[in-house]
Length: 321
Image (cartoon, rainbow, N blue to C red; front, side, top):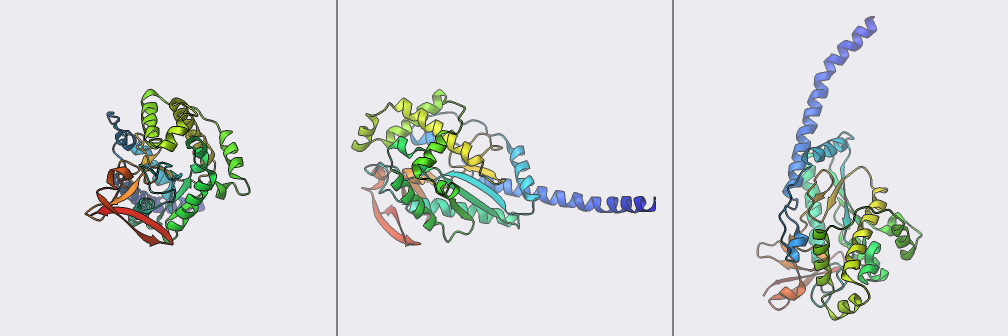
């Protein structure tokens, strides 16, 4: 009886401390969520980039997002964020990009992610890290990009991130060692996929693909298949690579380079200014020192091309003449 009484006294004495800890974590989670939302996309940049006007959907899932963050904080370990993307450069070197390797656009995006992790660490002392899972091998054949080109892009991307302590690049070859690119792609195609494109999604993706294939080489590729089939195959592969990666993800909060209406599932981030992802365009230096991504054909006559070396990589960008 005395022992039970002692345990009860201890329990009630410690309960306020647990309450204080929970309140402290809750405030930290609120600050983390607010920081994430300050960098989140508020409109569909993919639709805007191809002049497809849609009414923005109301974003939801704020409560679920906070619960995800809190569950990670309770581990007293760094917050982990996962992002699937950075596949390969557009193959349209005539109008979209300079070449097939990452440049200042990718570097600016990686630095934006490092900056975000630094900002989150100010609110959560255990820190924050982001793991980027590249997806180029999942659908490069659909676009007509070689395995060799994808792997060269991934190797250069890793070099660009070597001095960013909170950013890690993880490729399919890292997760599936010993398999050839073709074997990896075969494994991806065995993954399940569920939803099909709705009419709006299909129109946006078709318009994006038209800009990708807006070159003599691209027009030849389109002769092999229909734009409709290409869009559906891209969507299917996207679901399949996400299905495979989810099995590999650590407990984390999912990020995206595309607008997301349900923040409880995934947060769409603005990595660079403009309406394009870094691999669909070139980096343009603004007068305020920040970068935006634009199609090469829109700036090559009005801007000056320059470069600097970062971790041995030529980081090309355009600036005002």
